[in-house]
Image (cartoon, rainbow, N blue to C red; front, side, top):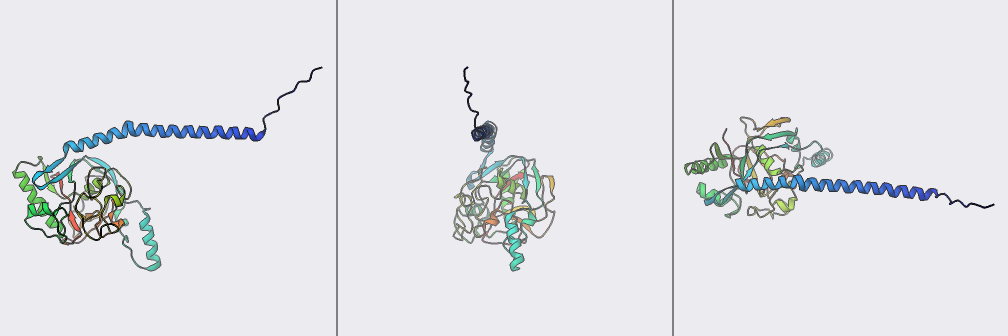
Length: 313
């Protein structure tokens, strides 16, 4: 009579460990597939699209040669304008106000950046690669009102009306010379055009690393700096945050919410919109969505502007 010896069954802990390894391998494989899929999408779809957009901007770029003033072509598009309700600085300053009864630098500001609004811009436009410099201003206007002096520094101590007069004189000069596209004129960007260009496809508070892109209170030494000495945004624009505030075409007014096309502010008012923050302002003021609305006629050593070339309505 023979005795058969059966192999002992696998132990419970060993089976559980094997199952756990298989589960982790499946998770790892799924993660690898997701990463490879993202890389394939990014380089197969997104990267070519970004290259085409960059090529289109380069193809359509303009320069006012005698002013050394470069204009970046901005394609039509859609973006989400404003600040969400959950913006952390708003919560922080609201809480501090309740405790100390003192308003903070962001008090009330994020509220005027809502409701968030889907904006579609249907017409291309050009925007100055930099803020208008003192050399460019002097060449057109004949004098320099700036507090901080320097040809490559942004012009400041100019009101909204002063900036519009510069645009009018430049339009007349360039139109007489036959150098303007049909139906276009030099002007200030609308608020929607400005934020669209500032964001350059981004959706956060800033279009990149603020210290790398902006002169503000933490790195400026409380003075303006030559334009384009900081990192450009993704669309090739310099100093959209910091250095000097930039005047926009619009009168100050509330956002509509929902979806709008080619929005403009109210038809009249007493305050014009300025964007971008300045050399003496905090990081909060340099946010892509921040809105500053000084009284008409206000001048300051922190107020300048950026030139736009837009379709005439």
